[in-house]
Amino acid sequence: MTLSQFNLIQPRSLQEACSVLGEHDKKATLLAGGTALMVGLRYRLSKPAVVIDLKGLTALNYIAGNENGGLVIGSMVTLEALEKSPLILNQCSLLAEAAQLAAIPAIRHGATLGGNLCLDTR
Image (cartoon, rainbow, N blue to C red; front, side, top):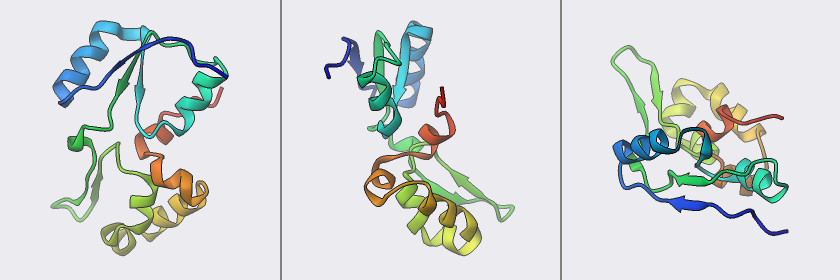
């Protein structure tokens, strides 16, 4: 099955990604891990004119503790990283367990937290 045509934009910074998204508004979609987006594109459930690839934005891929003892997690963190992070395992083991239950290992390797939180369940 072929995909509908779209322009792929690979911003180099978060600022550039926001600018491109602002320019294209509802005609654009964000690509993170791509596990759900690719299904939508293949079955023509989604026909964006522009796809903004976030994979190169390392500013969105982090797991850190904060001064209050909580966790701060970037939207590009994969489910696999959540499952295996020593910080998550130590401070919030239920999150690691939930990530492990979300999908098979091959999917967890690419699927991102942000993509799963913003998933269009149709």
